[in-house]
Image 1 (cartoon, rainbow, N blue to C red):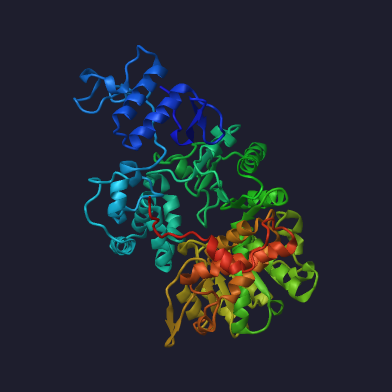
Image 2 (image 1 turned 120 degrees about the vertical axis):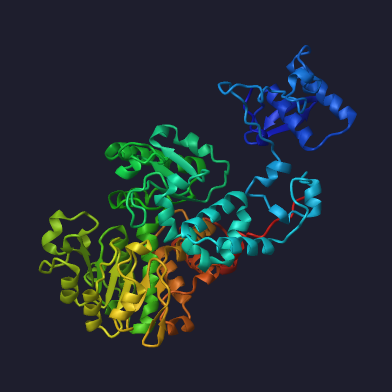
Length: 626
């Protein structure tokens, strides 16, 4: 037996001699591999010509040796139940014997129906069913993609639990990719809370139990020294964006190990519940740390660049604070990297604050900011706010930081604590007497903007909200922690306790709230506003590095999409139903900044970057097959 990667074997005739060449590298392959490729090509094309069959038989016999039997010469003893010949002995093999997982190069028939990239279900036309050998494999009805969409949405709405809807969507993605994405695009506001926060949090927690089919790559410590080989196992060669995690800080849920995202770097887990869970799918060991962790990550980063090139965007997701900042600092100058928790969150929050000035008046520099939470999200947002204030006022960034205060688990971050602080907290240690809790900090600092990134639910208490409301006519309150259970307060609490005066947004979705006869619609400061458009802008410009000004450009573009109608509802973010249009404008603004900074490599620059961004977007509409 031999392993066959059929899609990469080509036939070439030279001087009457048939040679087998690899379609990827052009190297000549073995004669038996060539014969097998020829056999599959003939079967796939349904050759019926007697001369063609005869030529094929003699070719195979010649390669195997004159005395060896031909595939078509097998007698009944070599068949299973008198049916199709078990030529390679796979049906007769015992459980201990090896068999070959055969594939063919062109999807057709049964295989086509089970390839999610090309499957259209009942939408295959009569001609496609005839041409691609689908007769009898499908019921006779032919339906449109639109009807399929209505049917699936109707089925999904029948489920009572969000996790059931999530699993139904994942099943659809595994069976029909284009229909999955069409559903998501056309019903994004209804389905985003299912495939993203908050339901995705529960899915990550229970992933070992609901896991059915792998999606993406799992690179564990077992693959150390072989990461490049693992990357080459992925079938797609043209990779432009990679989202990677080590699973240590998933949303506000902590260490979830090997249970999320397109590339998971499995370095173990310190979650005792997972280590003792019989359904856990990752390495059952404590997390690697120190030099072992650093070497493993460096091998991954080097392998990505070697395999996919300089311009692949690596998006870090859900790394714990102690690794997130170090990875961004270490690889920000050598690789094209973006940390969604630090930079993506910061961009979407800054956009909301810029838009909020239309409701409360003034500029960013007129405000005093107080954060609950001083991790990667909190400090990332704070730094981007300071950068934007510095850009607007031309003041040194050190002076702009003094408008921003952070509270962590030990209280207000002040100068007297500086020596004991982690490095990313030190820029926010201003001179002030120690303050032990959030309520005292609100009363001492008297902020106009209160931002929660603590990952702790119900920390914006009634006393806290009433206190900030007593100092401001329109307090800006952003409860950003995910999922919904970890939100610092609910929309109803924020509007009720502020007597309907708060400008409010959250990380997870909340329903509109009626207070004193007025409907208040909470905004959602969702990273999904930023990272798709940001990634597209980076890719379409051929940017070689990410610069802070590109983050500011994404925030500016998002804030510009909030309309007067949105403001009248109290919103500081545009409706998510317009996300494709929003993403196109963000991508265009990011690309324009990359060209301005000299970081773009794609030439010439497109004349209309918005239209170019739209042309680069994925279309979920079914394709017609030859």
